[in-house]
Length: 387
Image (tube, rainbow, N blue to C red; front, side, top):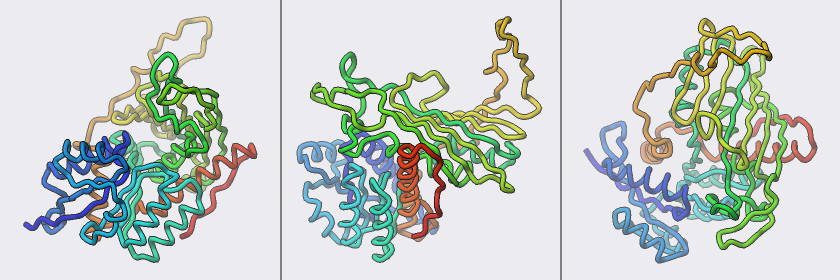
């Protein structure tokens, strides 16, 4: 067995997502397990260099996670021919410029989403990556959640029969900063800094809907800024100029021309009373299921109860009792780590990989159409995106 080194430039790992999901639970975990196994029995060991502006912070992170390499000089990191992959998890507004620099340096690209704040920039990245002949991928983490993997297995097994509808609920209360400290960065609520839940979440729902339920054909979206003023990290009041809630309806491509209707509410201004921070309720002719991040509960056609509407009598049925827990059919690893392993195999041995910059651009496309729908207060068809 041969262990192959893969030099990896990691930018934006001081943020919550970059640090926890990508550095600690993905790359460090992969290193601790002895690398990524290849088809021929060899292994790939990622050798990351952490890049950031704050030297003390980056150095401390590097030491804390295995004495990793670090630098504040991005140009020098991009110039190093032994580091062949560039990863970015910094702010969306910076991403197109950073990725273009990395592509120009001949690096393979892996990045968080959204890949850009507008479709023109996203497609420009696709064109640049194709012209350079580099490999590229975009994080599509929710496809690897145990709950959605179970739903997909049920769909492929025919459990739902003809799928009818999907109802998604996502979000929780993000504190304003007066009574309790904020738990999300203040820039998320300033449109001028790239904030907004439509930009943040609609790109997720694009790949979830396309891959799990049916290709998105059209969208109707209403956004809202329910909390007009918040406090930032220093306790200063600021105007919340970005949308903090999104109410979207989608028409999906179903079987035999019969559409599937999806409704997804995304909100930083809701208090959770459901099974998880995100749930997907799927109804079909033969059965229904409700999925959270990990668990799925199902109800088949033959197990469906027959309630009676009577507002004068307290409901005798506990509807939660009529659902059966879908068992784990495998050991599920961290979804971010799983996708990292797939991308590493793609880079090193050319293994198939379909979540590329074009797929990332589809998410940005749907964001733009959602904002257009909100502005014009109408349904918008989703054109086929061709690179």
